Image (cartoon, rainbow, N blue to C red):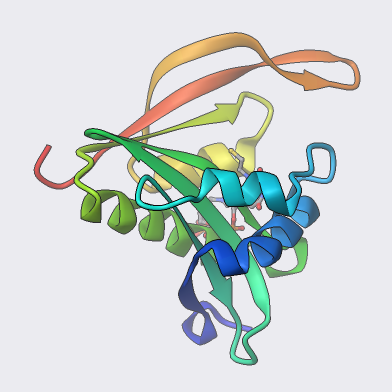
Length: 156
Ligand SMILES: CC(C)(COP(=O)(O)OP(=O)(O)OC[C@H]1O[C@@H](n2cnc3c(N)ncnc32)[C@H](O)[C@@H]1OP(=O)(O)O)[C@@H](O)C(=O)NCCC(=O)NCCS
């Protein structure tokens, strides 16, 4: 499967169950149910997109919210078997486009310091660090800091 065969689809409240299933597969230690996902993507502030393969099977998702000029990626994930094919990058760009459409001039997110794959994706996608929250994420053997990253959007 190549990324050329992948298409992005906006995910509204009707797709909240699909988004939740993807979130659970990507974050098994912190699963969100359909109702929680639906609450987060209520328009107009919230939105989501899913990546589908050429048979319309979901491979990844992104959820974001906009408050005035600031947008935030709430969660992003790609199924393990579909990683490292460019889908994560596509989903970041979906969040960028959706945030700009809603008037945001900056896009923020939090990433755990022990998540090199996500950190590399964000760095490659133009994000830079603007803060650090010590002990933000719980781990079985303790806590780990979150880095707060920012990407300036067009017009900023
Ligand atoms: C982070 C995640 C979304 C990346 O998705 P992906 O589809 O594999 O990412 P892409 O294939 O688009 O990768 C784009 C770039 O990110 C970087 N990258 C992605 N995964 C990487 C890894 N495992 N190691 C190093 N760099 C990586 C690379 O620079 C890559 O470009 P390249 O393949 O040309 O070198 C995916 O690993 C995932 O779902 N992880 C579990 C959930 C998660 O941690 N989400 C983020 C929480 S903040």
